[in-house]
Length: 341
Length: 226
Image (tube, rainbow over all chains, first blue to last red; front, side, top):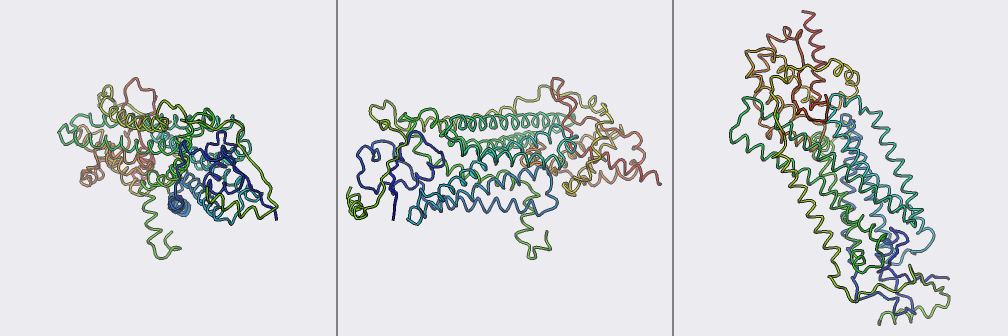
């Protein structure tokens, strides 16, 4: 019987061969040092930044709750006839990508737990192939959810600024075409990225895509917000338009709420996604720097943040729509399913 | 080190191990000697920068509410502008596909909006009309279900949904003047942005005006049969 004892320098691995391989192997860092003949300088550098470990129950909880929420959104949009509009289709696509991400991440955690317990071999061919598949799915869901955010922002922009022509511009056929394009390009990109991750070019493309999407979403929402405020001021400035104190106070309160809504929407996106992408930047730019290594030691925290974005996404997009909430209530509290929808 | 020793005892009994040392790189390990700043300085700097960015964005958004709206146009002159007929004609075709996307309250809201515009030509009811406009706008804005937080933002815009009772006004406008005013029915620009706006002729009119068009056609048919 053959066994492969592979010694890997995980903590402080300066040039990650594969991004998600880091994720796979860093969880079980301790179990790798069970071979004899460990050279002293190959041992973990204890004076550096120790890796921050997130316990498995946290990963599982976040994964399962986000899976449940997003699956609920997907099922609600698909089953309810009056939610078949472009806006809801984009939200359904976002929820589907989040579902894939949650499933994949939870499964990966499960496999890591099993591998740590000794039931799985980490370097065997089926495991590495499975690792490849999971990395591709994760990549696809990341790129896909960013694209879905962009699509939702563009759809809202068209709703506001081309309101009369909205139904000409955004027909259901075009929506289906856009969604098909998003899904196929995400699948292709994911496979390419995982196969050719060794090239720096791919990582740079990934980062550039993220930054460009972020800038576009920021611009669209701030522009919409600005125009909505101007609209509000114009309405309020109509003659005979109640200049009493209470009206002004109500407007100030509502303005603050609008600003808060936008800040939450955009802030959650940035806070959850930026650490991971800065990690990508760092492994490309400064692999040898000790400061960068301390940043990289927080990798698991950043992945948990990304997963929690899949958790809070339904709360800030889907659950705020009254129509969708109504459909949920009907779905969940209706005794006879076939009759309800 | 003791459990390494223990495990080495166990693994030494097996004779058929293949030893593989995999290193990511052959270089020296990262040394943490002689660091000038704190070890986690990049992490701290990143999170502080992110927090500052989010707070800055929030303050920029709240400032926009205070300093926006360069100047307000005269509403009367704006209302007399007519939208070109072509704008309304081309959207009617796709309405049937998207009808199910609109729930009933939207139509009811737009009906009151429609009736408001019917009464617009009447000079005697100008003040009432302006109140209608605002309450109809609130009504409409409160019932637009197309966009989530823009839905909320619209409600916020219109002052948190203080709906004024419309029923009496709706009844009044419906009964006498509907058919009479349909012949000179025109949809003015509801909101006029400033002249420097780059939006062109696409003002912030919402789709109730689309439904107005269809309803006007329906009412035309209805009036013609009488």
